[in-house]
Amino acid sequence: MSNPIVTCRGVTKVFGKGDLAVHALAGVDLDFAPGDFATLAGPSGSGKTTLLNMIGALDTPTAGEVSIAGNRLNDMNKSQLSDLRLTKIGFVFQSLNLIPVLSAVENVEFVLELQHCPAAEQRERAIKVLEQVGLKGMENRRPSAMSGGQQQRVAVARALVTKPAIVLADEPTANLDSKNSSDLMDLMAQLNADLGITFVIGTHDVSVMKRSRRHLEMLDGRISSDTRR
Amino acid sequence: MIVSLAWRNIWRQPVRTTLSVVGMAFASLLLVFMASFQFGAYDTMKSSMLKISDGFGQFQPVGYKDDPEIEKVIADPAALMAEAEQIAGITASTLRSNGFGLLANGERSFAAAIVGVEPGLENKVSKLDTMVERGRALTPDDDAAIVLGEGLARNLRLELGDQVTLLGSGLDGSVAADVLTLVGIFKSGIPEIDRTIARMPLQRFDDTFAMNGAVHIVALSAESVPAVERAEPELRALAARHGLVYLNWGELQPGVKQAIDFDLVTSLLMYVTLVVVVVFIILNTLYMSVLERTREFGVLLAIGMKPGQIGRMVWMEMIFLSLFGNGVGIVLGMALTGYFTQVGISFAGMEEIYAQWGLPSRMYPTMTFGRVLGGPGAVVAAIGVLGIIPYRRVLGLTPVKAMAA
Ligand SMILES: Nc1ncnc2c1ncn2[C@@H]1O[C@H](COP(=O)(O)OP(=O)(O)O)[C@@H](O)[C@H]1O
Ligand SMILES: [Mg+2]
Image (cartoon, rainbow over all chains, first blue to last red; front, side, top):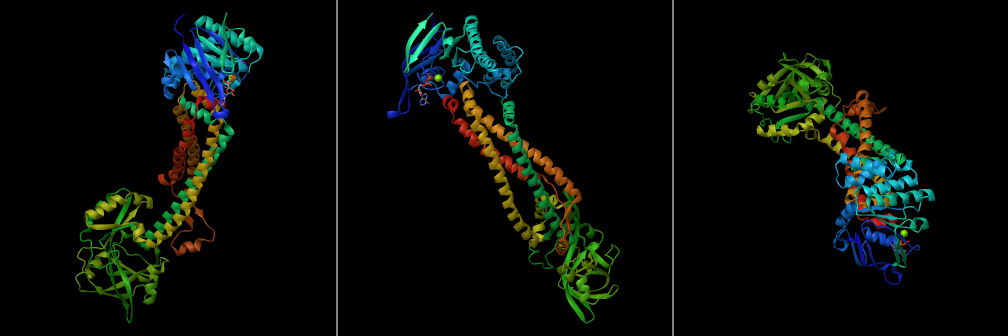
């Protein structure tokens, strides 16, 4: 197995203090390898979102270490973490991922703009990923003129366009009906198979869990099972 | 793209933004109009006061204003006049000399301020010539002629064509005596002037008072009060080079200046209130729009936008909105003010009060850069500076907390 993209060692997160302290993560040891297509399941409050936030450099652990693509997050300041997210990590959230006043193509271009990519190249790359996520012809629509499923596809396109090391999706299908949710999973599975993009998907949707090649279960802030198939 | 995003963000809430723009535009329209009208009225007051006799500005010997002794003179005024007329905004200049003396008609005699003026030039600076009610103004051909204020002529019981005897002391201490013919009587409406001023040709004055070519005052005429105010630094420098002083309108008419200053302070309070109210209403609206977008900012932070970039975008939004609102206000304000600069504004019932001050009953606003841009500029600048508040709020956001909002 090649070097992992993500390593978590003893990752602990405690919210609050004293009697009110919540141990959202209680020492998580976990690796993700390039090309993983993993789902992360578990009851509500088990720590899925908290763990994804740690892996995504959105939050810092109370104890333990996280490394992404060889970068130890503990050693990095806010600005470096921000740059790491911009270049190495793609995010798809449950809803309201997009900037409402920008069209689909502009939403995708936006992250390239943040990377100071030349304008002509931005447009070219954005149009190409939108085609890959099946939104050819929708480039100029604003989010409000698209269905929930289409909006999530734009979010996937935006996550992909920077060619990140890993894409993290927290409940990406939670606001979609079963048809759209299945289509979105198909899309991510396809992108994983065709382009080798690493996905970690937090979910409590059983139909989503079935699609992954690696399945993690969480309980009370710990990984309770890790199965590959 | 951030610029375009900021602009589009403003229009997310079209109704709210339109209301903000209308509010700001209305306030800045008011500011433009009120300032232009108020200062325009001041200009009218100043220029009508000044035009009566003083002129828009004067060169005088040092100390002459406070203690007008005949010995304090401008010995060689020709070069000064020529240089002054070169200065932008200055349209004409004329020489004057002042002597104090007794005017007598038989047994009757009254003290008077005898002013030697240059007929033909004087009327470019002061309006007394146009206020001649009986007889005529002085002309360049006049020699032993005199024009008196209406009160002075009445006190002396003089009629047109009568002889009047002048007695005073000349520059060299000799007795200045002359006999002049009354050719005209003026009425400015200002009792002080009408009871004391007598005007005679400068040439004759020079001989009578043994001035030997020297004068006391170089009086200036200008395109407008703002024009002469702009030229003031140059005029002062010129005066200094000739060892003289330059007196502006406020120094020539301290009473008018005091009245204007008082009025200005009161109205300044009103302007400041208006600006503060507008700024805080707009700031509140904009701050709301930032709070509402906290979750969205969380997503932007998550995907790698820096807090400073988001903060600058928000700041830009505020500046765009205030520039836009005030821009509209300035254009509309200028249009409205422009209309009234043509037709003027008159206040019914005020005519008599104004006339006492030598003022016309119809007032005209006048626009200058300062009057048009001052108020709206203060609004934009205040919003620009206070944009630090939402900016700092954005800087304090973290992606997780913001997305949880
Ligand atoms: N910001 C926070 N402050 C306090 N407690 C939190 C915070 N975020 C999460 N938690 C708590 O941490 C635990 C794990 O939450 P989360 O990771 O969101 O679970 P999941 O995504 O699996 O539903 C929960 O008990 C939750 O209440
Ligand atoms: Mg969750």
